[in-house]
Length: 305
Image 1 (cartoon, rainbow, N blue to C red):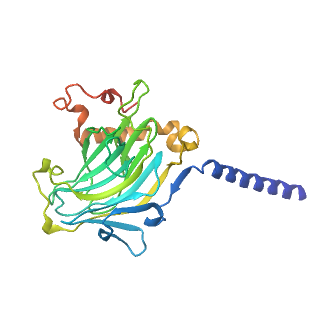
Image 2: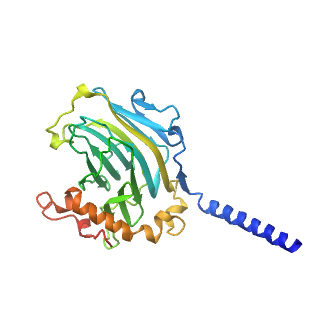
Image 3: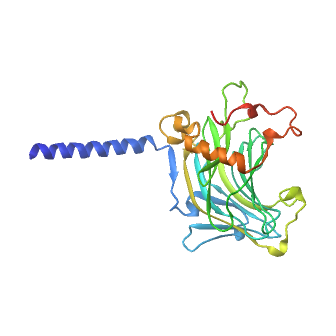
């Protein structure tokens, strides 16, 4: 009996030690759970009077009127990881209104910024929303894709996520990959894949009726204001930036989002992605020969690899 007690005690000690070591190894990889409040993760960028929360602080609302919109950003910067948020978009007549959910290396739209965008382009009542995604490296974008959705994003919350590592950027909607943007080590001077600068995560609502809906033909109907988009369940599993260079950025083994399986789509994800490509793509800059007679180099990289 005494021997058995010693074995159990020894096993309990080893289990506790292993848990402690795992926590220590993951100390640079931060996970923000959905139970945290807005104040735990974000700062309001502008127009605090256009920002409201639910009584429990778990739902955050941004509003746009004829005076101004509103926006918020994370308190910390990250370089690589998994970033996710649930959004419910502006309902009804939302033409000209853009709800943006994006990552950026600067607080403003600086000329050398890296940026990864989800932009939700409003429309007239009854017309579908369009999601525009874009990628910037050192201030250069023009890498737009547009997709329609297979649901009404104004009726309920849906999850929009970004997987970012040194091998690929993947945009997800409800865990379905809608866009895959690959890196390549075959280019000596990589000018297309953002992998050097840490980024904040932002969200905002603003008026863009000069371009957002039918190329600017449909203007914002201010009689319908205020326009409100809602957010909840922010989650991040990523490498929180710490100068001069956090240890988790240089590893490829400690975090699932930077391991081999996260460098490529899984078999199931490839099936979902193929369905999206067949049915939901509205615009792809890599198919626009009029705009790009010589396609950008990254268009030659297969998203399936």
